[in-house]
Length: 149
Image 1 (spheres, one colour):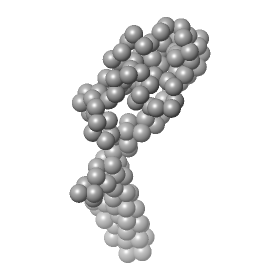
Image 2 (cartoon, one colour; image 1 turned 30 degrees about the vertical axis):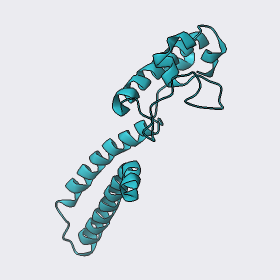
Image 3 (cartoon, helix red, strand yellow; image 1 turned 45 degrees about the vertical axis):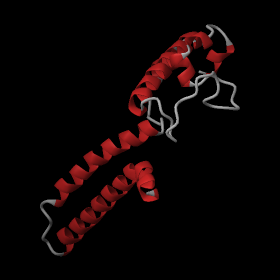
């Protein structure tokens, strides 16, 4: 059972490693066969293209899981801080709704999200995304809670 938990967390990485190995081996074999034996593989480039396209999809899911997507922030850098705070708040609400829909309100360990403010992330003293989504009375406009965005 622990293998299944490990595979659930690392499935994308295993697939990415598999695709990388396939692309490397096929490209290397094609170069050797083409220049040493004058008989290239006609299908290896197609398989490498498919592996590259599939790896892009798996990279997308990895970046979403770790919230490390590449963003173009040219527009937001030029905006005033108040507008940035409002945009970041809306972004967090949308991301939280998508996460809520995907997980059914459950955390990584399968427990329900806590109901009181700040309890989702004890010790940090800030409101969690759950608090922002489902407890709007804990979101005072113009307070220090917006400064963390």
